Image (tube, rainbow, N blue to C red; front, side, top):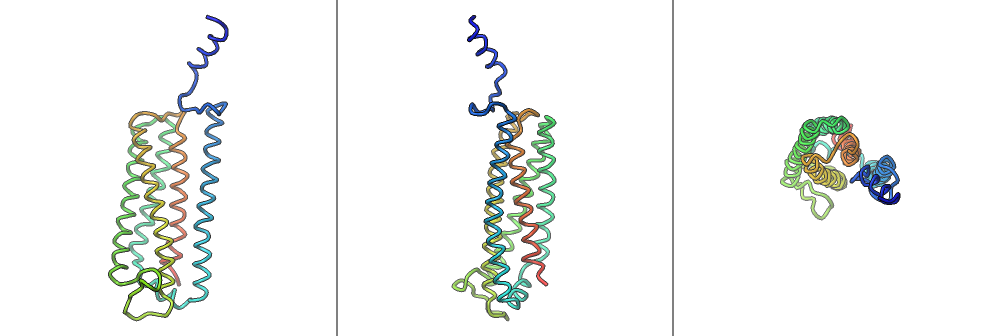
Length: 224
């Protein structure tokens, strides 16, 4: 065997199948992946940040409408969803930790709990949306049909309510889809202490989704 063939043979033996060819080491690939995820999360913060700014501006224009409209929200359900997402954030941390320690069963179990919590959140949100639909508390003036006592401008509040919680809900759905994909790979035994980057990245994403709700809950449900 020639020297070139020997080097190629040794390289094939040590090459990580998860490492892309354009990265020198697995560590470099992991760092690049994290930087990419952080950049993506920054764009998400900017997206929701624009909605937060618009919400605050309109609240300044219609303060009485905001105070009146938020009483139509079901604070108990909002609080329940807050607890559910906090639990899911904890189980996601435990899933990442399990991946780091090669604990496959714990990784799978914690991913399942996180996914179940995400579905619980969406189910609770469905009941909230159903209540708003039947009451006519819908976004935009063209769809707002509530006939009870109200303060002019309340439809602006519900426009922001549906835009912000709806966009957040789509992020929950996206997180569920990615977690199911990662769960499938976890069952196949793809993740080890040497390679768990996808689990780490979905963990970062999920924590941001939870953090956004932590801001949405008091902003929408706890107006004084």
